[in-house]
Image (cartoon, rainbow, N blue to C red; front, top):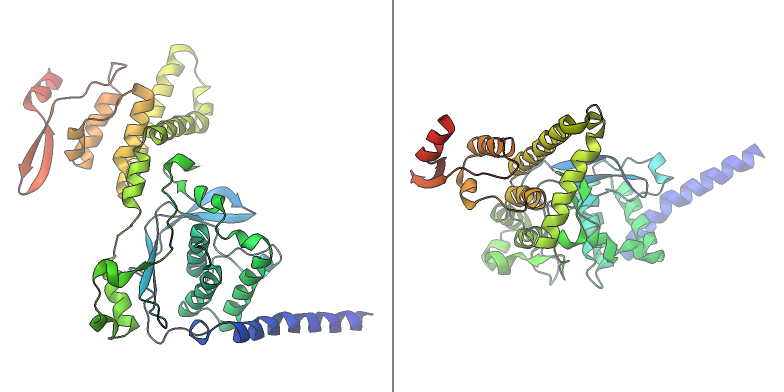
Length: 375
């Protein structure tokens, strides 16, 4: 009996090992079955900035959030032009969508992790009729990243099998509407704050950047590197993010989320006091969370004013003055502290004047405001 079990296990293992190799060989075009001879995959950096969310799971898998736009460039394959896609800030990924049994043998954080992020992004956009190509690009990206051909083919076969079950989530509305996370607030972005899903995942690099045929003829490595430099730090969804985050509906939700986070995280601290002392402690802590959030978002260079204004709008019924945002971060922090921790329950802003110094905007409180503060 034991011998039969061992033989059965060996046969099953052999099938599982051979099937992906044969399946990929027979069904995938050669250009996707091998890494490019020379490519930089359009990456602007070897560092991928991700924030792993503690105690957050998606179908049992850990989730991370993109902190800096990630560029992937698709080589000009056949008649297709040189194209790129940029994974926007705030996008959350669960890396390789492995079934529980596969997770016993494979970690989602190995060399295929970046390719898995690209695959998740393409599925979230869900461009009609492009699922198979999204899977093929996943295979090609893994090979370009140095993943073993055997492992890469195993993962490709697994995602193709996922097509049999609800398309593996490809193009599902929730894959986009629930795909973004506000790390500063530690909550999913409400749907009213999320930009519209683009119709296409990839954009023609030659049309948007003016990359001439002469450049593409120099080879995919040169063209990719050139486009990567041109796109460094670029996020095509930025304008949409600003519009959505600045909308009244989103501002209210973000402001509420900021206050709720402070009340939830520090309820134990608040409960140590009562009456007027508790109210004073709550005000101080919640204001501190608002300033900390604003500074945190500013350090990442993403929409810091919109976060602070969302809080001020919900808490005090007004936004910050335009002049505040000409200040450097240090001076701005001092003024925010004075305003939020001041004796008045209302916001009382100092008179701030902007002046141009050596070609840069430099803002300081006016002399009258400074003298009033001194008095």
